Image (tube, rainbow, N blue to C red):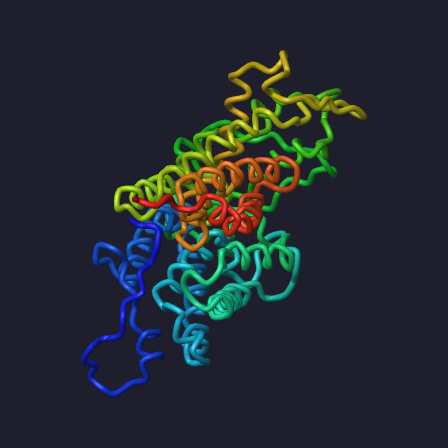
Length: 417
């Protein structure tokens, strides 16, 4: 897959007389290798099948309804905005649907309901899904189509939802293994009441081997991302005299298998790390993304997670902050496990494969992409540790994308002769 899109000239013999400016705007510009823009976005959308199917399996029919409502809202918005001005004629429907799929995968499935247990509001919840699709369509029109800006629209809309409805985006539900696909995601027992800052122990039996113990379709759990950020930001209140990082991973974190295969409350597209990686490998195989971008993002994030200081131990009134690479009391086994949780519990894998590698966001040159990916990985790791695991990677993508024009100017393509 090449880096740039090539705009073709208008057809030499159009079926009907047409102003040449509008004809050029409405003709889909082909990519090198005779791969059209529409086909390019259709191939990208095909890669979302892997996390989408995994999300429907783990979170049931409400996941499918969530995706349908977001895509429907975006479709209606595209029908309206594509008719407004020359800018509207430059908005690609295929790209809009692809962006709507990505946005839907970033949202939790419990939003496809009127309400749910422990909901922070008594109002209807599901209207925010088509509203998000409508807002995405407007943003695509504002950005005037492909390649018009370095800001990815999906993180913009997602972070806007976080600002307005952050408490409603926290996932708490996952289906029991006996009720996958067809189960009601919000049919779960109420959660255990805890004191502020207290973390409840979790079952260590993997979801793939867990036997249903109640007549409910789903289970209410505290997401792994919340448990991690409560500890790394220093807001953890130990139930005993002290709580170390090793004890947190051993007693209070879910099995790592539940994040790799599936079985923890997460957004739809992040429920199974295996599915996200399979989709990324599909795009790599078809040449849709540059392998350097996700690879360097992961390397930079891992190094930053090991290097940046975190509270390796928490006492009643004292916290001991230290880098995992320098702390002699934390072994490499604990450090590796902690890094694995940080990578799997948040959307970093999803962002690296599906969002950060987009042609309109990444730099044009290889050297520029290298610096861009390393910067994104470091920023994402810092934001996950000190801000929030659930949306740190999205904010890091927006910040790194702002430097893309600078990287394109600094790392100019070298002439062939």
